[in-house]
Length: 130
Image: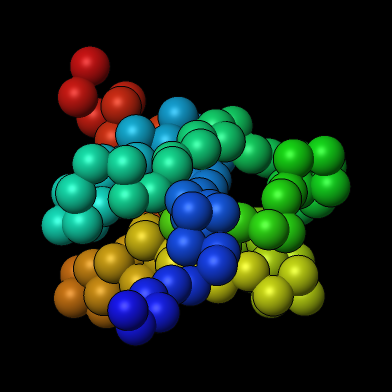
């Protein structure tokens, strides 16, 4: 009888975690991540929402306390403030964590189309629809 070609660690594989960071509630980024994750079936990733981030120190503290290096991870984020966005991106790059800026490129394109500067208002989508 031939030996089965079994990978020893197949049952120890970790479910990847997607950290959703936002300076507001994180609904926008969470919706995008959920839509993308749905392409891979239930339980393909764990989504951890970290709302109300106001400084890069918030991210450092969270990751220092909760980051699990045995789990693959990425960050999806929406920050209205460009400086905060860049600081957090540098911190994630320093840690080797891939990240996706979901808001910055869209704001840039709309600013280019309209010729207007963005307001950089945190949670603006919620104030617009009240």
